[in-house]
Image (tube, rainbow, N blue to C red):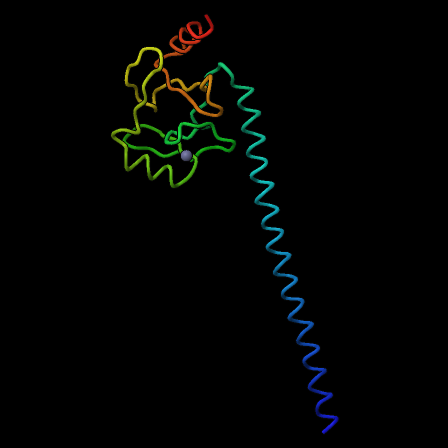
Length: 152
Ligand SMILES: [Zn+2]
């Protein structure tokens, strides 16, 4: 009777150890995932602020913006085409939204001429006031003229 109970307790100790090992591995896995997620997020943010400095008052490559959120991206955007025009979005969700609201979302207003223009054919420049936002212009000249007006 005494011997039997001893064997049981040995087994349960071993099981506890194995369970503990699995739990520790699980916690470690979650922590590592969070860490990599954080690093990725941080990296994207660093790239974004570097680009904002680099592209101040310059034409931005369309592949670096989200045409639905009208924002600069710290990572290359997803390219997709509608008809024979190319659009860019930061994520699948924005891509879907742009496609669903295509009749409106494909257009933007040039802040200088106030003409309605196609985002796919526009000159993209960072907005002078809202951080990370972009404006769409018919030509780089329109941007320069607007900037001259604002700087006066
Ligand atoms: Zn987006």
